[in-house]
Length: 208
Image: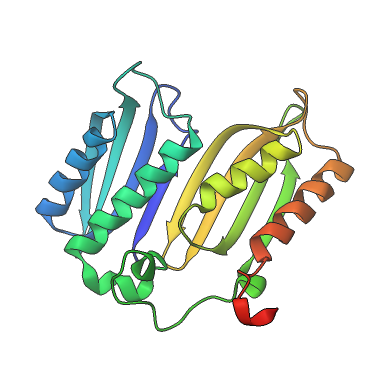
């Protein structure tokens, strides 16, 4: 199962990107080069091999200021760049990855129904923040769309963990409202907004 995980929590100075896929040195080198082309610096990295699967962890910062990546658009570009490199060296993974179709590689035989697959939960994570968990069918632009929906109802995103597992995006966000955890009413508003936008089907011209 191809996995791309972007972790904003575990390191205060860098964005941690963890990849799990086949053992190909070319893919690793190309991924590092592609990240640098996005204006990023790979501060350090670790590689562990378990059987045929290589688990690579990059600690990346912005070249312009030496800080971790906070911009949702750039985080999404990082995710798509890594997945594109993964598919380049492992085209066989495209059938188990929603992005295979998006990048023009062979589409997955089994697709997720967004309405069935979407799961959204909000729970307290201390007095000053809440943990928002989202599972939904993966697609390009998903991260930016989620961040925009959250911002539209004036909720702050403090940190995020973006996890792409095959056809499913499993994202976690630490969120707050005016420096405090979300109350039950605001949590329900957030869940309802996300559920509406994430389940909304693309309008087909024949539906008019």
